[in-house]
Length: 506
Image (cartoon, rainbow, N blue to C red):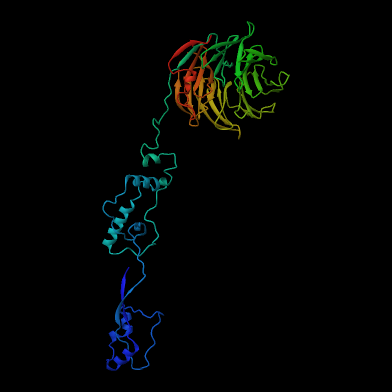
């Protein structure tokens, strides 16, 4: 509070008595001159109005007596204000008021690493103002001193490299970088009589963790949890297995034969439930859609079999000019992709008997077909020896997205269920297995070990392990994909350890 001293005016009687003996006022003592020099006056009366002048015409103002009056003027404290932002002076910070490490870290996270400290900037502004004499009057008083960097505004919410600049190592996961993939299989199964035929599909992995393999004229089941091998069926000396396919529920297995038959087996009871003899030639491709089974044959036709209907098939799809060797339903069960030895890739809907989409870019047989589980309508396909390319299609917009020349025959494709990656197996001339990252199509790993074309491929139900089969009559198991976030790191224990094991499928 500031204290102001005021002079009390004289009473009327005293003014009359002094007026006769007073000299004429000098210019410096007149009221106007006092006001001009900055003198203040206050009136002591409760009404706040000045007293009425005396009746004497000769009265003149005199110097009033002094009196102390307490004013209500408020002067705020600006010690804690950040006056540097407004080009105003501020008191220097007190000793020991340096910002704590936590405040420094928090300020860098919210406003960026280059934002000055409040106390330090205020002290600097104060010292500069003192040396200059006064703060500059020009410029807007609400103008900020410096703009906050844009990258600092989103430092806590972005997923880029800003976090490492602000907090080195805090947002970076341990072991970040290229994922390491073991280049050797952790398990090998001998599979005698596994055919070396590009157009067949003899391996499939069920949702119940059971692997079905067609060997010659027999079908064997290998339980990945117990490593138990069960012989499901024997077709006899006059027929051979050309394809196997598990239903989504994992209890029923479809078997396509060289004589054009499609058999449905109950795997839990090892009992044949039904045989459908609608194709005239071998059935090399099978695909399930709930209770609907689609089969592709060398007779160029695709048949839909409804297990609830008494007829062998409910519809026939025509369009291919040669053997149908690839067949896959999309994950939403709305589209069916088919590939043939006529170098054609067709897409069908649930009710069409003619293809709704036709792709003719491949220059060799299209057996490798895979729908993405991550993007609706994303389809990958691979061509044979004369083509060697993996192509990607958007069936929603009917566009060809990209193509990658792999350098060798593409035999199979499968997407990871956990990450946006896929695996391709190859034949002539390199017989390799490649793990790709989509959409960059950068190679994460190249696996070798088979001495023949890697014609068969299946993925485990947890999405971490793949099994490959080749004409060298071996099945090899590889850990190539990471586990899903909801699973523990040791989820592979149900299908075997990481140590090398070799056994027989029969």
